[in-house]
Image (cartoon, rainbow, N blue to C red; front, side, top):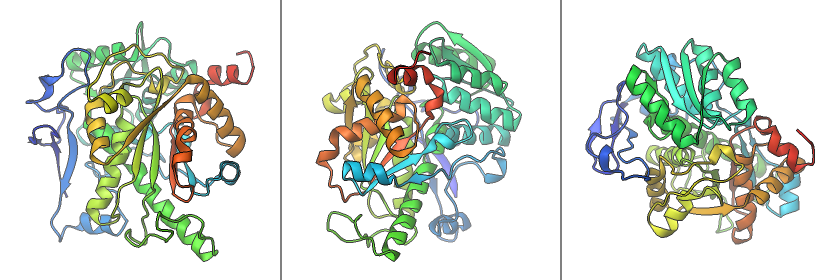
Length: 416
């Protein structure tokens, strides 16, 4: 496979190489208090005789722009797709699934992106990586750095949960606490990486972060196919498509969900998942795309507002769901473009709804997720009556509840 960067705005292409992050032609197009423009996308081309193409079509390879031999030795990915019986019964939702990325090594979905960025650094002999984070990407990159022997310097708001800051230090990362928001940390980290010439792992800035996160899409489609096959063998046909028939268009090994609910801050997880399903359609593994839901807190809803109004407006973020708390989503333009392309939607919920959903999720399934993940479940609960209960719905749970005990404690009346 031949890999390259492509600018979605102007179509210009670039080699995937150190120091390349954004399109030279479009990078200067963003105005003040607007998302980044010129965000590049990883694309691939392959001739019919290409061995990697054959392996990908057979389900033996997820196409990625860095060879597997460079990946640090960490068990990232292949996380469970839960079929929660109590929640399904209580909600009359036989097609509900929970994608549990809380069990990645650092307890976060962000390990998928960090692993690919770490592999890129190893391939090119890069020794240091810098990034900004509200906590999860920071602890994730520090975790990967510990396994790979990479120096990791992270910039986080001083208000980031203690558990996430402790993780960074335990993994041996260098922690820089910023007196400000994530947006301030982002700017400080870029200034550092530009001045020192180190690799930036910043979400929505380094295109590899989007590409690394697509791997979850392949796992979802694979595990849904396995689940459907097991149900059919047991004579259980409750989960079917709109035509009340099992799917004939997808391959025997992959099955597309009807809906995917994604916690959304900068929009990179959302973009990565869409990219993964796009790749499966390109490979012929799937025929249709799911409906994607951008799930946001009411106090940090720039992408939802932009999807409705057609333009971005900067408002100070105010939500306890720190992992999806951003004033202006750096990947906003890219994410909204993807949502519109595939008929995606956005939904917002209050912080009180997020905490209630966190408790319902934990007590009804045994899965304890942090508030940002609970936001996706809360958004599903808000719109579930508009969804056919027979349809397959995947809720993305991207971070462990142990990462933010303070808010979880308050929600159940425990003094922290």
